[in-house]
Amino acid sequence: MPHFLNTLDADFEEKFDQLMMLRSGDTPNVTADVAAMIADVRARGDAAVIELTSKFDKLDLSGDTFAFTKADFDAAEAAVTSEERKALVLAAGRIRAYHERQIPEDALWTDEIGATLGWRWTAVSSAGLYVPGGLASYPSSVLMNAIPAAVAGVKRLVMTAPTPGGVVNPLVLFAAKLAGVETVYRLGGAQAIAALAYGTETIEPVDKITGPGNAYVAEAKRQVFGQVGIDMIAGPSEILVIADKSNDPNWIALDLLSQAEHDKSAQAILITNDATFAELVIDAVDAHLEILERREIAEASWRNNGAIIVVQNMGEAAALADDIAPEHLELCVDNPDVLASNISHAGAIFMGAWTPEAIGDYIGGPNHVLPTAGSARFSSGLSVLDFMKRTTLAKMTPGALAAIGPAAAELAKSESLQAHGLSVVSRLERLNK
Image 1 (cartoon, rainbow, N blue to C red):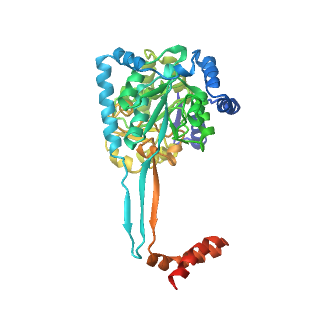
Image 2 (spheres, rainbow, N blue to C red):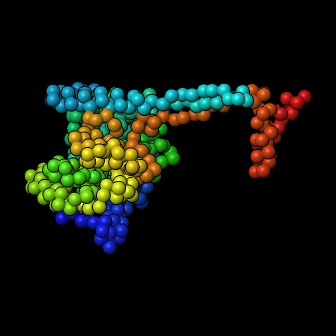
Image 3 (tube, helix red, strand yellow):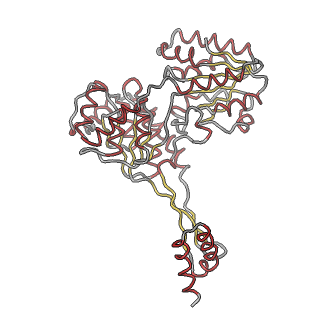
């Protein structure tokens, strides 16, 4: 049974705060362990990566076998069924078309004093894409990470994909090929992040690391930030569905379970203005759990972290949605556009009963790498801009410097930065000769 809240309850605020605290998941404290692994990789390079991969993935490698070969790619592609190929090709095309619209424009103009100002955008030189392996081996994550980087113009793209026991998902390699990634290392965990950040004898370091992973991967990304850029620190998956009684409770139940089946720490929440409809959804979830392949995971997520919140109106629902700032937000109401306009904080919004979140995970076009645990209040999902840098441009004419230079010198004086001021004043003096 999920948590059941009603905004009319006297203790609603207390229960709601407790519900939000569940979003961090049961994350182990791995800070010291990860720091030791990163230090080991920095000190011993390939040797440390080999030992850690053997320990955690039960896979014995050498520097020569870190990367998949062309023969590996060809074999993987041959193992992909025609239906899978068509689906991945369609997804790649839609994701690429969506992200191509995100390419920002350079700008350059001359203002009223004759100063030329502007900015230009350039891609990072290299990026490392982390793709989970084992049970959580998702070709969709390959497309969502690699395609924006390729669209941005990143010159060197490499990918790490752990293969516990040597098992590889052929769809992952085929997706990498579709996205334009030629180098894929069969590495994972904190050691892969350390290798991408600092480099080894075999692996050249990158400028930016993106992609989701377990607690060790998330902590490693946190610790190498500054040496390299990262996309975000991702937590357990989450979904918030706002639905009225006009919906099919089976649809809503499946939408909730679509995230609950990811991880026992995932969170699925339904907000509705109809208590009877809420009960129907709970019954539908229970029925689907009886036959779901990942029942154990989904059931634990739903039982421990899931919730039903009954509100009095959709205004309350919108306000709660902003408080939650969910990773995924479904608006299953008659006029989702109006409701969406009243919500500011969400990683991705899926509008209308015919737009299940699962479409966004695979084929819709927008990126599925999204902020979690309320971080949608201040951050966005992965995009082309994550792989680009904006450089500002400024060019002064003698006249422009004469117009604004004295003010710059005055501000430098007020901050007691003498050289700053003199660098301007010395030029102004030349103009006055």
